[in-house]
Length: 461
Image 1 (cartoon, one colour):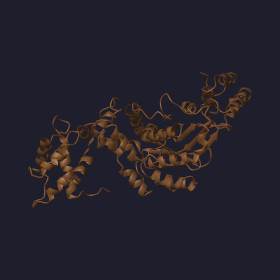
Image 2 (image 1 turned 180 degrees about the vertical axis):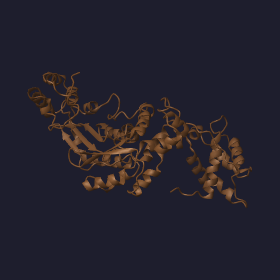
Image 3 (image 1 turned 135 degrees about the vertical axis):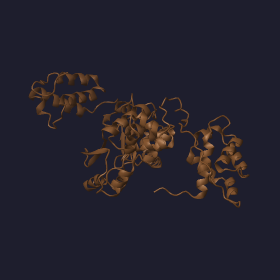
Image 4 (image 1 turned 90 degrees about the vertical axis):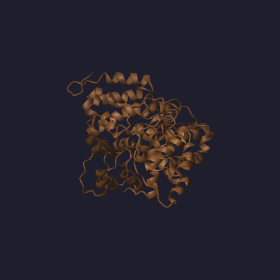
């Protein structure tokens, strides 16, 4: 429920609207210009306006460029110069509302040279997404989700479908997959608004030119490798962080709210209850899903999660430098590696990583901590890194045995999981192992070429 503004807040907000109206025009933030616009909105040039305008006129131009309505209204509300307005016999009144045209905000240094579409209003957003205004409103309205969460008997128009998949170590994994209309909008947002924005160099997941292989290679041949996992990575990214990201990229408040609504989701109460019944979801996990969050299954979520984790990566990279270590992140997988002395510092490193993650709105998984010295097998996201990045030997042996039996008994004998494209499935596994070891790839391909696909639905390409 929206809190009702006090009278002082209403006056401050009305003045803020007037002062921002021409703030980007030459001389628009000079004390005289500010005072004139304030007098126009109040219908009178009261004496207390002069010191207020002079105080605001001393702000730097850079501060004015980054100031939005809410921030300026709060600043005016808290100014002692405004006290004089309420000490006179007649309180100030708003005679007219002066509105500035909607416009993009300047982006921070380092992001200002990236070309992003200019979308100053929600009408422009609907046009850019090739949706009519009513359709955009239907996709972004929070009312349906709130009603569904409050009362499971309500049948809202859901924009997502749910899949529950078994995890390798037990429990269920929730996928929240957007339906066609929303998915098209999210694809457009990903391609044109998110992909041009760089993420931190330590982030290797879902980044063009980086991969599991580059993430693992950064830690190859190190004396100690230490791994941490973030709990509920996508659900842990709240809508408030997503909204802040859109504001940082220069989008006005209304557009930022609409983009946030398009990219976040509240999980249906019935689905949360199902996960809790399974025993794989604790109270905090249920709370994360019940609040608007990045849904795992949306095209936008990986890119937005990386951007929202920028400060986390920045701080953890600095921490790694202090410990003489290397740091990279692949989605929720945080890895540090370095000299043998890092093993003795594991407790201190863990405490710092836990504190920084919590400060940035994330949580470490308490049961997924790994400290791997070089005399043991060191794995990073399933890749062995003791000497160089390589797929585990057992993975190679297992795939070689499957290919051999496919060649001897036919591919149907090994497709026990009834994979639709079993041929592509096998080629994918060969490619995964082959990216680390071309010799192994050649051996596997020779076995693959002996398989007879006649009589199957798999047509050789």
